[in-house]
Length: 394
Ligand SMILES: C[S@@+](CC[C@H](N)C(=O)[O-])C[C@H]1O[C@@H](n2cnc3c(N)ncnc32)[C@H](O)[C@@H]1O
Image (cartoon, rainbow, N blue to C red; front, side):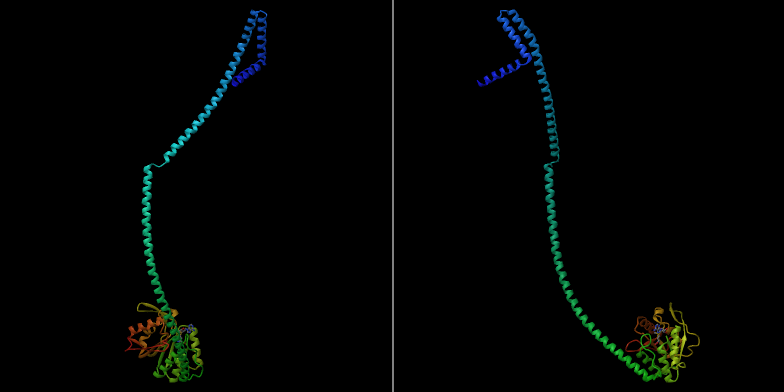
């Protein structure tokens, strides 16, 4: 009921609104005129007025309704377009989503692929396990090896420490032996110097001994040999203090001569001065003998160039103490091969620095090549005495 009432009210309100518009008011005038004419029994006029109202109102109403309808259609068209566009774009979005889903679907692995992956993962796991096990075995094995190695190293260390202890003992022993030998050498030298003074009774002090010159011990061997054997000719290679000692011994003998070969003019002059100072020129000659090339047994050597006539009789004693080793390898080797034919049958060959490598090789060559053999050497092993086993091999 209330719905109906409100509907009636709404319709009335709409009519009232419409009748307030100019066309509404005009319609009201027509209706009022028609009613008035009809009340005045002017029915025909009332009909004319009504017809005129209809003729006026109907096209107006139709025109309005048509316009409203067109507006509605137009609005509906706009709205529809929008809706169509919205629906199209939604459709497009849905299509895109569907396409994406299809694309995603194509990336999803197949069951076969998943199974094959599973298999490969399992087999690689198996392989890893196996390799890990074999690595573990290797580690265990190498650990065992390492243990053995450590044990061996520990043994070695123990052995080494024993060797070190032994070595230290040996070093201590060697040092004490060296000390003893040094003491002995010093004692020897002192005793030899003192013996030289008593044997040779020099008017002036003896020249310096040791170092580049013969040691006191070697000088004693030379002096004693000279005094005992009374040689006529002593030849020495390399002049110096030894020339003075020999000359002093020969002077004691009152006979004989030493010929010292000297390649260095300075040393020759110095030796001559020492001899002059002691009045020994009669017993000693320093011969200037520069070094020259010799070819012996296919090998080149530099040795003294002996002027003719300086060695005019057999050599009884040959003292080999020059030239210096710096002039070449086996520098003193030529002494015996060059002078062999001038050495007397009973000649004594004295070799200084006999413990040096070159001299050791040299004397051993002489022994094998010239029948020389070592008969003696000083305590300090510096001076070796050699003799011929038989006639010198010329
Ligand atoms: C070992 S030295 C001869 C030493 C000599 N027999 C003596 O007892 O005095 C050999 C040669 O070296 C040279 N010489 C000597 N003393 C030297 C020195 N202090 N420095 C460098 N050369 C030296 C001389 O030419 C000598 O002939």
